[in-house]
Image 1 (cartoon, rainbow, N blue to C red):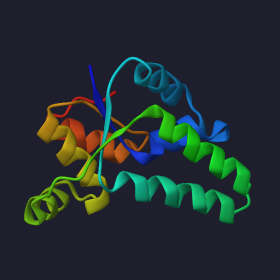
Image 2: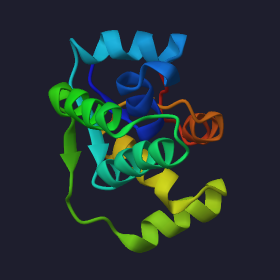
Image 3: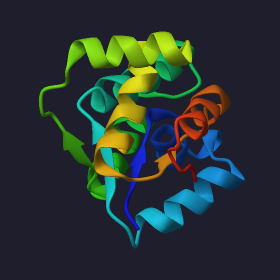
Length: 133
C-alpha cells in the first residue's frame, strides 16, 4: 500500500545519523510501495538538511548526497491547489502547525496512511481517522 511521508522520515532515510528503527522499516516499504508528499515537502526536507549543515552536523557533500538519495526514492509530490481555509480549520482543530496538517490533509485526500517520526502529528492523524505507519 502506498503512503504519505513527511520530511522527518525522509531526512532519516537520507542521513545515516538520523536513522531510527522506524525509519529503516519505512525505508524498506518505500522500496516496494509508492510514496507521496505535499508540495511543502521539498522545502522542509532541504531546510532540515541545511539546518544540519549550518550546525555542522553534516558537510556540504553529505547534504548533496542526501538530496541525491531523496531524488532516487521517487517521491510523488502533490502540488494541486489546497483549500486554505480547510488547512487552517484542520490546524485549529488539531492544534498543529499548518505545515504539519498539510501532510495529514494529503493523506486524508488520498486515503493513505501517514509515515512520520513526529509523535504529535501521528497522534493527530489517528484522532481524525488516518492510519499511521
